[in-house]
Length: 327
Image (cartoon, rainbow, N blue to C red; front, side):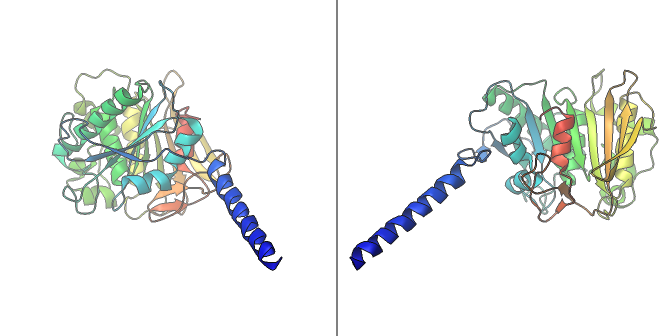
């Protein structure tokens, strides 16, 4: 009888473990099979980048594509998970392209947003990312009219590059702790751009954009920007300059049409003559250099805190995705 009871106890424990495992893997919203995949042979790849992508299981054709560019010292997987973009891809149903820098290109794994040969249309890293977009649209039958680009820090700088050099490919961009297009050239140095900023009028900023894609008459992508007020790596003046650059390109002034707060943080909106919001800015009070996230299971929460991914009770990816109409 003692042996029988012991055997029954073992069976009961095994059943409990089995039920727990099934519950863990069948929880709604959990990605049970989709995983990050590397894609090779996506083009001539003049910038020698790596391409990763995330496609939720059962994603139908005709869904949006988001390009997410990591910051320095980060990689595609870590940024995709930490920022919350992969979580939102499962929640809202879109695919994500995650370019990854190689240390052979930049020792700190930064995208080279400041190198003339990497920021021009048809050249270097910019061309590599554009080829990734084309490959992704073809492979998943994505919606070419709903392609978006976003990134943190150097990835934010490269986001501005993609919006400038390939404006026809992107409906909108989300720049987090990033820099305006051509800032390194305007300031004479990437470090002056980051730590001090460049002295340019809105028209001069806009002219740099227009020169990146000669003959482009529009539409230009819209912009959503986030910046920590205590960021000493990329100074807050860079978000002001982004606003100046993009309002000029869209032909509107630099006076906000809406000034309010979101989750307790200052938020501004700039509209064009037709009343469309073309630039939005979020100043994250007291935040240093990083991607704002709000870990949790709430409807507005996403991301997980880590190095340069900061829990400030606001998830930038969620806010950007809502502006873009993804969810």
